[in-house]
Amino acid sequence: MSKQLSCEFACNGDRLRLFRIGADRYEKVSYPQRCGIYSEVETRDTIFHFNLNHEIIRAAGKGKSWPHPQEWLKRTVGNDWIYYSTGGYTGVFETTGEFYLPNLPYPTNKFMGGNPFQNPAVEHLMKNWHPLLAELRVRIDSAPAAILDFVDTLLANGPAALSEKAERLARINGGRVSVLPPDTRHVDYNVIPVSVSSGCLHKCRFCRVKNNVPFSTRTSREITDQIEQLRTLYDRDLANQNSIFLGDHDGLQADPDLLVFAIEKAQDVLRLCNSDSASMRGSNIFLFGSVAALLGAPPSLFTALEQLPGNSYINIGLESADQETLDYLGKPQSKNEVMEAFDLMQEINRNYKSIEMTANFVIGDILCQNHYNSLLSLVRDRIPRTTGKGCIYLSPLENKDVSRWRLFDFYRFKRLSRLPLFLYLIQRL
Ligand code: SF4
Image 1 (cartoon, rainbow, N blue to C red):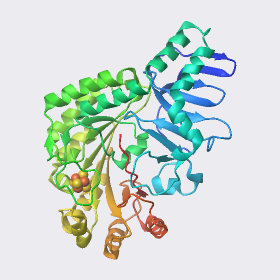
Image 2: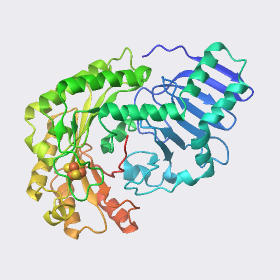
Image 3: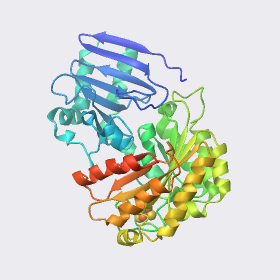
Image 4: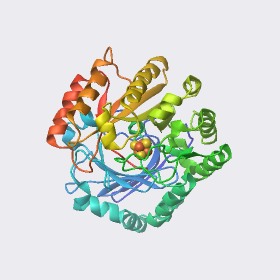
């Protein structure tokens, strides 16, 4: 555990608490859980949280104007503000596997939730968190030096500095991470992105996250340089990080030795598994893979992953087990390859304790009934017994709410599936 000197100051309704110790693991709980070490500034109207670099990471209003006492804004390392809502606690956990629904400020395959960014209190806090802290600085002018230093650093880490830092992260990675694997929900999407490759093999017609670059991998030298730069960028807040995302769209297609090299290097340099310096227990590796990459991966890769510290989550874009649908999507893979990949994933899930293979399938009003029938036949008939490992994620094709009928269908599938089944909300970093 990182040794930080906690300290506290309160004056006329303002309270500052430095280096509070939150939970040391991510858990699925129905109350807002704060993980790692963070500092808190509480004023009459607002609560702010800051990471170990004294950069804002969360904010929430107090009182009647704030939509819900258990809802909050989170600022990501990519400098997006995300609003976490309870969704009235109806159906959020069943559909996403999490108790709180991240509402994103950009177009995505949204399936539920309102538009909290139009709420005046939310909008006000997103726009004015920095001036509000500047006002606090004036009010607490007589505070001890350590507290004033802390507030001065928060103010120096204003919107322009945070935006510049997010751009620096994108430059280190060779571009912004446009989509995170759905499994990163297990760590509230808090992953350090390490690019091992760029682009993907297929450039499918339906895909909204693809880029134009042909698939290529980084060299071990480039990966090492990248990880060194990430160490500098994350700096003291590395103690709060325990997970990496091996980007971008088909990390599994990279050379297996290179993948293992990247993981070991990241775990070592970023000290992801060092219990003496970390505030979060355990470590995780997340990556995407294509059907071709999975079918071509040697068993030795999975053996190597199993021997590394932490858990590995590999998310495969199966999309459909119906040929007509695959053709419609412009996904150049056959239904037989999809089924072969699906079976291999189940085998890996059975045989490797620390590896979870998960799959994505698309859903949409426009898709034919055979697509849904073939999906049901995979998740129900091809699985001998109910298991908690090997999540299936359904991803709405359109950037609009899933129709009522499809949501009803989702719940029916969920009931019948022998694998955990959730909706996939596409989120960037
Ligand atoms: S679905 Fe996957 S393989 Fe197809 S274009 Fe998108 S990222 Fe590439």
